[in-house]
Image (tube, rainbow, N blue to C red; front, top):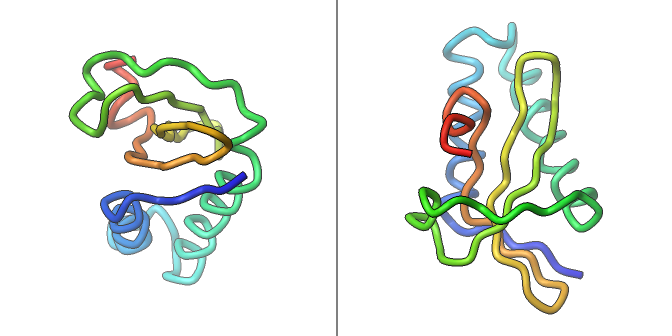
Length: 105
């Protein structure tokens, strides 16, 4: 089993640390960075075990034949990871949360 992140998904995660700190969701840059690191860790360890759902056509802008899985980080935020899957290889194309993409699911 292998998990790869598209460059756009990697860029999003990198920018997410900055965003969470700048919007004061976390009191320090280090805690924002730890949150994102933990999210990535959860994705890498859990994605193959998570239930997979077929992504609606709205998400075709990120790739064709996508699936998604949900990762709940706290009471306010769930992360949606959109990916292609074939022969035990996961290619993550987009990551959103309930504040940005849940209305399209």
